Image (cartoon, rainbow, N blue to C red; front, top):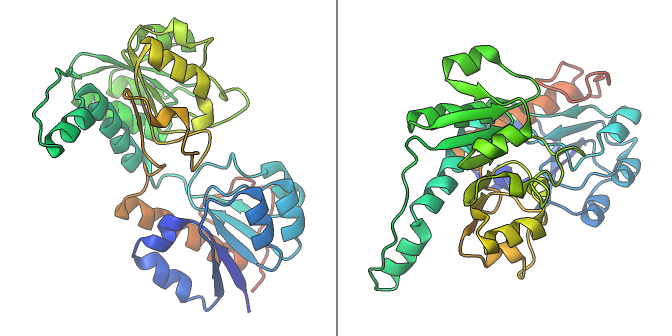
Length: 326
């Protein structure tokens, strides 16, 4: 019987049509609770034909063990920085993904973090829940400038919502969408330094690459306005942890709202978990019922199509042909 490894927890924990779609295949489903580290991923592969993964560490060593049995790797989501894409391609394993399914949800989460910081949300709820009535004065978003690094689907949705709040929007992206920028009054910055200098709020929506790793660091932070608020719903490794902690403690950065960390799940003593001007959520920016179902249905559909030799919805390495297995 065809065996499928399923590790993403939001897929497993959220009801919806994706469960029926996967069950209807009649395949044997092997479940694990991801994200898995390299050792756990190595232990899970070897006898599976297909793999629906989240943010598991899928290294070359994992893929060496998984082949030739593994025929398809179907990513639930869009980020593939934990996957050795080069090795997938070398070994002839189609790597599928699900773009266009979570941009609305992540953009909403970005504003959750921003509003919580600017309105001192947790200070106030902690006060009232403890029987107090302590109050701090917050700030409006109106007429503040938000700098968006990465104007892909998510960054664009953040821009749309920022304009609805009456904010000024500046953006940086190597692939500039002039039509969108004109329609939504997004000012183009030609360099990252221009964004840093202009932004009251800096929102990160870029992929993790060798160029973007540690992009926010002791080198770039002094180029920003004192008291800037930084929002990260991209990848934790884009922000250098020790440097952002120091900047939060000194006041150079007024607040850090992040849905991602360099270590997930974090150790109990992770420095960002204890700072009063940092808000950390557990990588749930795309975890809504609507988004989970869209991602899950797309991931299962990709897997079914590929194993039957049909064109998937989206593929990272399209040069690797899908071949009929079933």
